[in-house]
Amino acid sequence: MAGGGEVMGLLQVDIDFSQVKDFDEAMTKAPITLTRNLGMAFRKIGRGDIDRIKKEQLQGGKGLKVRFKGLMNAFKARTPNKPKDISQLYLNEHTGWEAAEIFETGGVIKPRGRLLTVLTPAARDGGGKRQVGRFTPGIKAGYIKVIRSKRGNILYVRKIATEGKKLKARGVSRSDILGYGVRRVRMKKRLDFFANFTRNSAEHDAHLDKAAEDTLVAVVKNGAK
Image 1 (tube, rainbow, N blue to C red):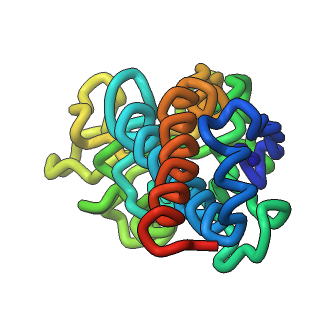
Image 2 (cartoon, rainbow, N blue to C red):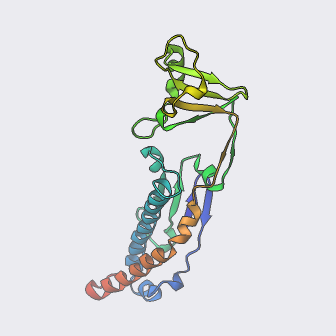
Image 3 (cartoon, rainbow, N blue to C red):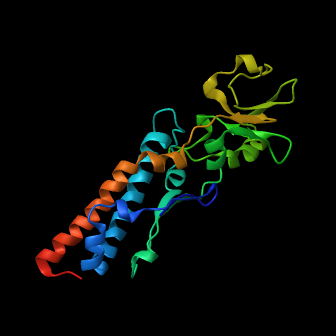
């Protein structure tokens, strides 16, 4: 079984089926049913892991507080549809969100160009999606102002309805600031994608044990193979 990320790398985890209660008996009496039940167990494990990381690390606590549904849905778990035997079973927990890596490890983000644009909540829509694409037309139209600091950083600010006065950064309300243009940003570690898998080991074991138990019950009830 595997848990990890396509961007951050893939964490390989070996499952010792000898530690699964009643596994050997279930494998001997009904290998086909056991494979099917283990497949369902793997799906439950993956779904549970991803649901937990969304709830505890992406939506609350000291995590990322992600609001954009597209980023939430970038965290996924994948299992085979119809495995024919146990050797075909796998679980891949991954994310296609490229920024996940820096939140997993922490570190410094540098821009590809001169400055890195960091948005405030005021520059996101109701779903949390970035609205940085509106900056350039907004600046040209005059309803977004650019304030430059002596250090070379900049502020993107909504135009304030005060004509004939020079706009100064210290006179700008927080709600007026749409974003910052900075040379670098240091990010703290705020995501434990890999450790999330390990923390849920007790729940994983319960799902695997239940798969073997259900298989033996099916053997008694209907002679499952």
